[in-house]
Image (cartoon, rainbow, N blue to C red):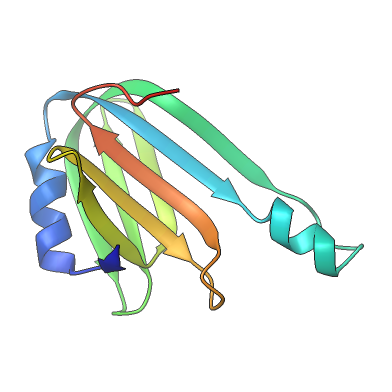
Length: 117
């Protein structure tokens, strides 16, 4: 993965607009937080192969961290804290947010084909 290049990621997001696509969205701090602080809350969210269609997609940020949003007919999907990106299998956009130590905190993946599970 490499640091997010906002213009390039925006082009890929727009590639998926108005198409039926599969989304993987995941957040986590559980494996990291509970090991070092017994008072820390373990939180996380995970959804894989949600089939959606969005009419607008946008990535915004400050040059260090980014937020990507997908506007659907009756709501939004968004991921915040994104830092890195890559294209996998020539057609899957992978966005991830890593903390200062390189640990995964959030990921958003979009593909025209379903993800392995």
